[in-house]
Amino acid sequence: MEESMEEEEVLIYEAMMDDQNHNNWEAAVDGFRQPPPPASSIPVSTCESPGGQLLAVPTVSVDRKGPKEGLPMGPPPPPDANGVIMMLKGCDAAAAVAKAAPAPTPSSTININTSTSKFLMNVITIEDYKSTYWPKLDGAIDQLLTQSPGDYIPISYEQIYSCVYKCVCQQHSEQMYSDLIKKITNHLERVSKELQASPPDLYIERFNIALGQYMGALQSIVPLFIYMNKFYIETKLNRDLKDDLIKLFTEHVAEKHIYSLMPLLLEAQSTPFQVTPSTMANIVKGLYTLRPEWVQMAPTLFSKFIPNILPPAVESELSEYAAQDQKLQRELIQNGFTRGDQSRKRAGDELAYNSSSACASSRGYR
Image (cartoon, rainbow, N blue to C red; front, side, top):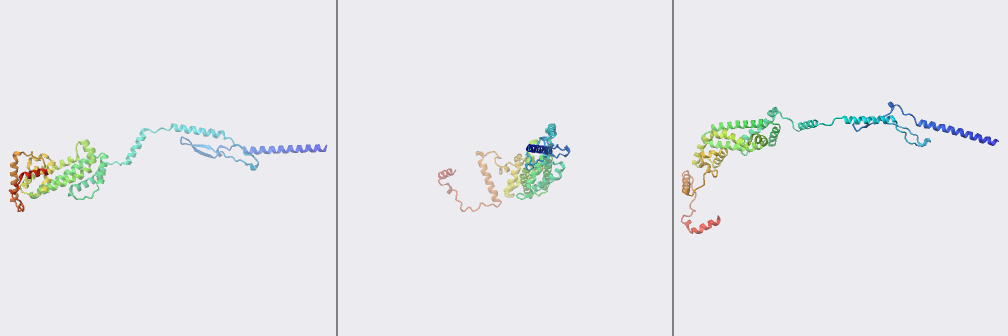
């Protein structure tokens, strides 16, 4: 009887202990599954949506008890339904904003290109051209027109060519061409006045200097303005810069002095070596370059320096050509030119031996 009562007491005690342990386990689980805090206290992390806007995403931090505390590690709690709905709404709003953004139009692209081109090349106004660019060109032209043949001029050809290029690109070609013609015209008018004041014995030599100096300057001026010549003079005026500059010398210098110069040239021709052959050749060839029609004023003079001026020789006029050569030799002797030592020259009868063999040998050399 007593043993049965003791067994009942043990069973009752064990049942009470089981109920207490069960209650403690439920309390622990309830503490683990606490309700989420209010929205204001939830830390927010940002994420960038496809549309470029930042969305607020709630970050849920859960403190889990490890197995050391006697609780098994369970799966993470499910995300809050309110946080998921808010994130989806934010993504939809970002997509709507991205769709509503206007696409780039061609006009905006053109504006960008235009602004970029302004940075690549600054605009040159007419005031900039007159105050900055043309003074550089004016000084360089002055030096080129007044230099002596063979002199070195300390100017930057690259800088001058760059100035011409920029002015042409900025639509200042017409003004630059007008300034160039005016500049050279004023220079040639001064040269013409200096020639008019020259005495007759220096007239030919000074004309030769002026002609050579100007033609030498053109060899530098024309290449420097080649960009203007190509895109303005040849395209719009249908002319060439070199031809225009040669025409200026013809009109302002040569035409004004041709009738004073030609008699002096003919007189110098009749007196051998009154003018050096190089000076005579330069003037005659220069006049022919300026205006070929001037050959008619003195065809014999021009024929001595320019080929094919006179008609071809005719056999019937050979005696006249020989007479002219003999006359020239007599004039040279009269003016003090000797024929040199003639003692070593063989007599004429010695040259006549075996004429047939001499002719044969000459044909062989030909």
